[in-house]
Every structure is written in C-alpha cells, then in structure tokens.
Image (cartoon, rainbow, N blue to C red):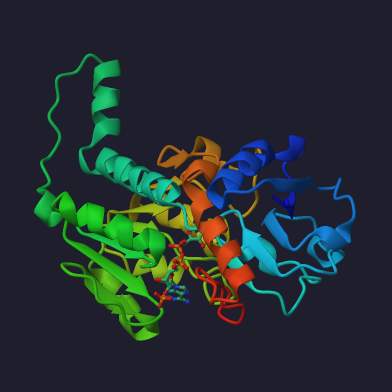
Length: 316
Ligand code: NDP
C-alpha cells in the first residue's frame, strides 16, 4: 500500500512525539505513514499533510503540494502567529478526548483543593494543629467557566455532576442543560458576579488577549479563586498580582504564562497565593488523538467536508 507522506513539524527538541504519531496514525489510517520529521523533510513536493505544533515561522510555506495543516494541540494560536502561513490551506485541529479529560481533571483537582481548604489543612499538619476550617457548602461555591467549547463543555458538565452551581461564558449563545450560559460582552458582568471559582479555557485570539485585567477581576466577588489552564496571554500579570495582594482574589492556579518557560525571577514562583504548573494541564496523546487526524485525511482524500476546522478570522 502506498505510504502517505506527512510532515511532522515542531520546535520540540528530539522530534517530539513523532515516533508514536507515525505508529498511531498509521494504525488509524490502516496504511503506512512516511513521516518527515522537521527539518529532515526530504522532497518537500511529496508532502500533502502537515502535523504542526509551534512550527518554526515559514516552515509550513515550504511544501508546494500541502493540502491540510493539522494542529497537534487543541489551541491554534501557535499556527496563526506565522506570518508566512499558507493562506488557502485548511487548518484542522486534533480532537483528543484524552486531552479533554485531562483538562477537566486539572480544573476539578485545583478547584476542589481550594474548595476543601486543603492548603490550610496542609499548613495545620505541619504545625501539628487540629484545626477545622470554615465549611462551605458545595451548593454555595459557584464555578464559572470562560469558554464553552470542546474543553469548557466537558469541564462544566463534570463540575455540575459534582453538585457545584456552574455557569459558562462564550462568544455566541450556547445552551447546556443545567449550566447557566452567558455570552458576549453583554453577558460578561453577570457571569463574573456569579463566579466564586473562575476557570479560563478560552482560546488566545486578538479579542481575548489581555482581557483578564484589573477591571475584569474586579467584577468577581471578593475572595474569588482563579484557575488559568488556557493561555497566559489572556492575563495582565501585574493586575492579577495586585488583585491577589489586595485580598480581592484568594488565590490562583496557573498552568500557562505570558512567557514560557516562566522566568526564574517571576513573582508567581514564590507568591504565597499562587500555584504554578509548567503547561501540563492537557498533554496531546497520539493514542487518543490519531483517530481524528485519520478521519480528516480520509475526508480530504474523498473530497468530503473536513471536521474540527479553524475559523481563521475568529482566531480559533
Ligand atoms: P474551542 O474552540 O472548542 O472553544 C472555545 C470557546 O471559547 C468557545 O465556547 C468560544 O465561544 C469561546 N470564545 C472564543 N472567543 C471568545 C470571546 N472573544 N469571548 C467569549 N468567548 C469566546 O476550544 P477548546 O475548548 O478546545 O480549547 C480552549 C483553549 O484551551 C485552547 O484554545 C487552548 O488555548 C487551551 N488549551 C490549553 C491546554 C493546556 O495544557 N494548558 C491544552 C489544550 C487546550 P463560541 O462557543 O461562541 O464559539
């Protein structure tokens, strides 16, 4: 069977996960994959499909017969930053149920940690102190999810399943059973006013860049908690630090940052109210993601409409 030539383009050292992608995509397609791992791309003319994650600028413009660009992450901001991104080639993203599940685990773990006052109990244990913290009823801890897409919907449903009053905010109207859905600029204030734990799972677009600033944080109730597992570019860091220092926010868990890796001198590292993780909330897993890529390659070859496509104008 003729192998399909696929370019695997990532800035990751050591070729990233190219070996697993070659195997898993081959299995999902039922035919061999001739994987060309950047920068060793061989004859660029052979390549029709590119798998990309933080590709070096201009790399995707190197393939004259390219017909499909696949983002190897669920975010696509890394692709749209490339000034030489070929204009007329469809972009799709992986749809990875495994990654979606990990994102929900992350949000729930850090929300429960805050909700059940675990940091206070850890401190009490260190002090050999038997001290019971104030009880907060789950029915009184309101979760607000910014972004009700593939990930935000799963996160929201799982919080709801745990008994938390759950709301969400999106660009266009959404309707999710049991979840208070708000949308657009007009819906933002009511959404924020009813949120005790804010979970950011928005894409990074021109509209969302820098939107989590002092004004927005000021609309959350006093004592609110913030979890950012989306993109650091949403946040004005100085404003978040000011909201934590003033006591308006009780704490934050941050997985993503304006600059990654987070510089060693950054105040987040040592801030007593901040938990830092190194962009690990959701890892793309070829085992769970390959089927969606294979599906799109089959659709492309059969001339059928692609799925999980990106709206370049909206930026996600
Ligand atoms: P989707 O594209 O499926 O959904 C995006 C959601 O955000 C939609 O509900 C959309 O609204 C909403 N949205 C977009 N722009 C705006 C806006 N201007 N105002 C209000 N709402 C807006 O994205 P996913 O759920 O798949 O992923 C979200 C993000 O999570 C990714 O873009 C990525 O940045 C991040 N991520 C982080 C990971 C990590 O490890 N930390 C791993 C994976 C993803 P509408 O429904 O109206 O379209």
